[in-house]
Amino acid sequence: MTEAKRPVVGVFGAGKIGEALLSGLLSGGRDAGELVFTERSAERAAQLTSEYGIASADVPTAARTADVLVVAVKPQDIEPLLDELAGVVTPDKLVVSLCAGLPTALFERRLAEGVPVVRVMPNTPMVVGQAMSALSAGAHASPDHLDLVSEVLGVVGKVVVVPESQQDAVTALSGSGPAYFFYLVEAMIDAGILLGLPRAVAQDLIVQSAVGAATMLAQGGNHPVTLREAVTSPAGTTIMAIRELEKHGVRAALIAAIEAARDRSQQLGAAHEQG
Ligand SMILES: NC(=O)C1=CN([C@@H]2O[C@H](COP(=O)(O)OP(=O)(O)OC[C@H]3O[C@@H](n4cnc5c(N)ncnc54)[C@H](OP(=O)(O)O)[C@@H]3O)[C@@H](O)[C@H]2O)C=CC1
Ligand SMILES: O=C(O)[C@@H]1CCC=N1
Image (cartoon, rainbow, N blue to C red):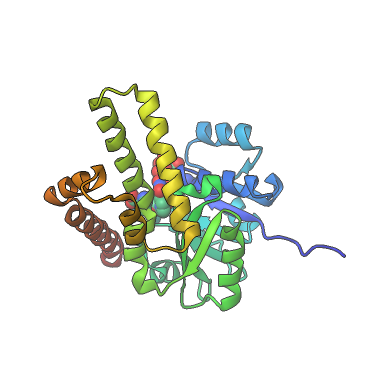
């Protein structure tokens, strides 16, 4: 039986998330020949080609070569890229935007009539096959297009479909989410240093605690409250720490932080609505 031909994925802007996607797809079994990317800096393009064996191309060539065009430039850099894509992207292609805040309507306005667009918010754990990607279909994207994006991003992690109206919230939660966990881990390692532990020991203790806790959350099916209560003994050590976290407003700080990230995602989109 012959296998159906897999789509060629083109990554436009191979920075942090673009590179994470390319390397995650390779680790997930895609061939370098099924991938292409564009980069502004020739030096960075050469470095990525040497590291991964994936060819780079200019924007029009990559747009013609790829079936799925993944846009991974900063929202602030989108306009010149859309100028380049506008003349070459045809409705038989699929455009996938990873850009925070940018609505599918922006792409639909700037590209040829009928080009399907899917907005995705992924996150960097795609380098280890553990991304969380949330997908929303634009006006011309069909269920088959969503299936195609799910298939590609399913190689590098989990996929969920959400209404586009929820994408700013998703961006604040799971798009930025890994940074919050890294920040907490960093702070807990500092606490270990304060308590006199060697840095490497503190890091091992906290990272393995994070891995263990994440695995229990992902696999155990228990609510986080139940899991935390199981650690929190009457008159024990954990409740003393929890009291301090509550006293310092850590829960409220996290809620406010995530709300601020949501607001910023909305602003990034609004900037392009006006311009
Ligand atoms: N980082 C993350 O965790 C996540 C990021 N995103 C989204 O992904 C997008 C990219 O973010 P991130 O990877 O962090 O940003 P980066 O700045 O690391 O990557 C963007 C890359 O695109 C290049 N670039 C810019 N314009 C063009 C162009 N016209 N043609 C080709 N390449 C171009 C940049 O080059 P140069 O450096 O020379 O400017 C840079 O290498 C953003 O829209 C962000 O919102 C989404 C989810 C998570
Ligand atoms: O910080 C940002 O804007 C991007 C979007 C989500 C994660 N990083």
